[in-house]
Length: 436
Image (cartoon, rainbow, N blue to C red; front, side, top):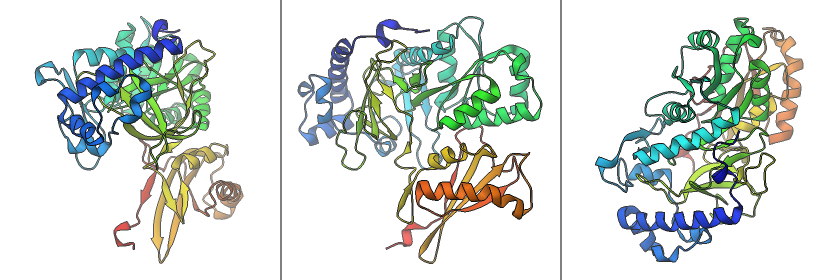
């Protein structure tokens, strides 16, 4: 189902005109009401009247997470406080969080965005949407909640955690859709299997998973274990939260709602635009936000954009699967490694669960790369000799892919820590402050 055909299927030239109008208006508002942007544009010698179309977006300054933290809490706010209806903040664990403020129009826009994604699962009145994202300052819970409400669905605000109760309510209340991080969905799938829940008797038919990168292998596992369609929902606090875009039923890229957000892909080093289809860093400009409009926000997410029409009928550009974050990249022995590469390899081997943990350290003058993984119950043995037939092909595949020789450690099933929110997969213990 397409929730808003007029916008989701708008001809490309019409969308360009709409985006150009909205970009010009947004830049004018930023310049006149946000001192940060006036200063940044003045430094570049750019005036609002220089921005006539989306082709001019490259004239504008970038915005980074550090800018938002430096302007904490309300330095980027474009409206007075009496127009604000809600405040959210990033889930960052260090330093000042990134704060997002919302007018009523911003909240309405956000609900519209999420509703477009949920409509892919034919969500409507009578359908129970179990929201297992965390509620509170994190945008996931209330964002999904309001999107379900926009479609007239039943909101079940379970939040994250209390997993046994989540499964009980899923069974007893008849959940049709679940929203959470893919890593938490995996944890729930494991519990469903462990508790011998008859999945065929569940009403569950679709899951909307986001807030962290996940692979096709994870998707296949979730779809097989929970008997669902697993849909990727993309978002970030700096734009609104979940719902900046989402997959359609063909799962061939994430449609970005371009009437609200203007996406670009740039080279993360040179910050110059890359050719269509090439991988680079996603940059987004908000086109309709009232409270905190954001120009050219560097998401750090590495992906690509596909402007070809989709089989579903939507003309909205498709974001490729996020490969990782430029700031999550590990440099080990001079080689660039993304945690998502490890996850992709693990899902190629049926004997392993998708759970893993990377520890990077430095001994002497050499980096060490330790990888904890789990064998599934039916394959696990504490006997190291019986583990070797599983370790060897995994080791060879990782060396082939990354060029790095990992120290692989088999852990008993269920012992690698599961997450109810964004999963933590890496501990980099190297002390870069002492490097010369």
